Image 1: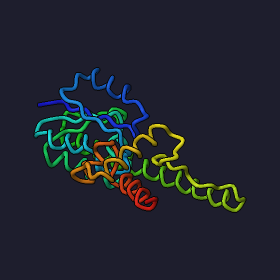
Image 2 (image 1 turned 90 degrees about the horizontal axis):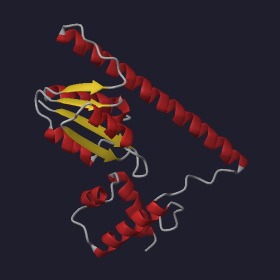
Image 3 (image 1 turned 120 degrees about the vertical axis):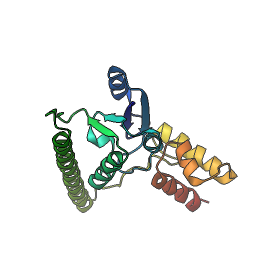
Image 4 (image 1 turned 45 degrees about the vertical axis):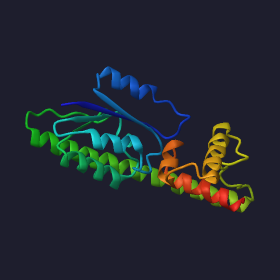
Amino acid sequence: MALVFYARVSSKGQNLARQLARAKEVEADKVFTDKLSGKTTDRPGLHDLFSYVREGDTVEVISLDRLSRNYKDIQRLVQELKNKGVSLIVDDLPQTHTGNNLVDQFMLDMMISLMGFVAQNEREKIRERQRQGIEQAKKRGAYKGRPTKFSEDSSDREGRLVFEGIKKDYQSGNYKSKAGLARKYGLSRQQLYRILKRIDQNN
């Protein structure tokens, strides 16, 4: 029975150190990581984790949003773990130890459902406030849109390098599949498709 730790940050520029320190602290047998947005579950590290775990294993994350930022995805991922007979530990959720495994699991399921719903509800409120702010900025003529990170003229050096690398591979045909190309550069498929669309439009 293995303790498997999953760590995720949203971008390559962010640091996994705090989560990896926790994995070391709990003496995890295996660690899987991703540097991709939690809005999608199309993440290599997460896929590898689900392929690796077996009945009796335990998966640990520091918080529920490391698994996903989408309420339905959280429910689906947790159910997949349960179907495999794999336990889940979420560090920032209180652990219950009543001595009755059925009660403990019920309490955990209830907390996961509640926290997942609260997290998504808060994100929707943030998006609504952002939308309202953009509408107000447009009315004032002050909205210029969000800068594109992955482009030939991006102010982000890493973004420019990723764009140029993808452009070179894409135009030379130096890739087996678009999914493989996305994994090579640590991007989601949606991000890759937007970059390829930009490349095609500029040709």
